[in-house]
Image 1 (tube, protein in one colour):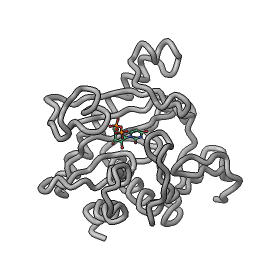
Image 2 (cartoon, helix red, strand yellow):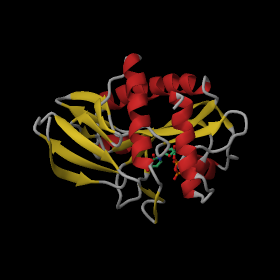
Image 3 (cartoon, rainbow, N blue to C red):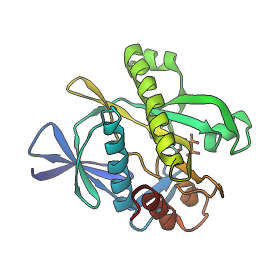
Length: 235
Ligand code: UDP
């Protein structure tokens, strides 16, 4: 397979065409942004770590019956994926209050939710990804109710698989964001699953091992991403 011209450059990844119209070639970057692009920086080796961690999670999910766009790794920081028409709804699953949920609902960070919360955000940089509900999704024609029902069920299943797997590695899964898309009409999980898009806390010390270290200037950002990789793979 051949890597062809760049189609798109996002905040954390570049997307290239390949000689197969069904497949894209993704390159993960070290660039980091937060607060809708207001804070910019780089995290050494983030591209590699997020590529390897995402590949690891997509494989784990495939073994558990969840299909994603992931096809194969191409290098330390590159993977090949199935081409997706992205559904512009970001799906956030939350087990423990943190970040915007803690703020919005006046909860202390670390409060265990009595049940899992699923939220939808409109994927729009100009608008800063506003929180939306199922009526907004229908009114804006972002996805069909059937697609949203499938997406919710998959997101909750992903939560159970990841939560159990991470618990065995002494990590709490606080919350995470998923994106979905259509590949020749088939709904697939897309984007990435990494410390950029999840919150992971050490089960015992509650130390943050995710992008909050960058967002909140906590230091040791690269070390935190490496620690997640090490807990998953032993490497
Ligand atoms: N998240 C993400 N991309 C976004 C917004 C959030 O990957 O554009 C992830 C974030 O890393 C966290 C979860 O979604 O794991 C919930 O984020 P939250 O709404 O608390 O927003 P934040 O505090 O990150 O701005």
